[in-house]
Image (tube, rainbow, N blue to C red; front, top):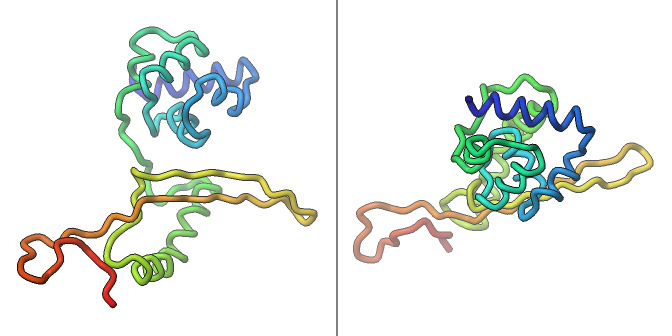
Length: 160
């Protein structure tokens, strides 16, 4: 079985059972909804205890449970074609240069981690149409300057 086959099986069971993502996340437990749903969709991995919880919930075999604990091949074709996902891509294309400039001005030469990372999604009721609030928090990782010696810092820094 390929990981994509397991994803389709899990989605079929979700549909047939009438489960919400919230229900699935509560039963698996231990992580944010974004990470658990990402794992069900094949983009993240679950810990062994969470994979066991998923196995019990979905009635999975030992090899399917083990597959949920394996590091997946992450990503998708670019640019994405789904309109909602494309809007996130568009956000980065349009706002990415400004985010980069602001992060570098505040923190120095480096990146925001997408591995040491957390994300929360909230629904904000609004009489003119509910709003989606996404909060992302990633560790700042300064670039390392290889071969640094003397008074030259080894890691990226914010210059005064």
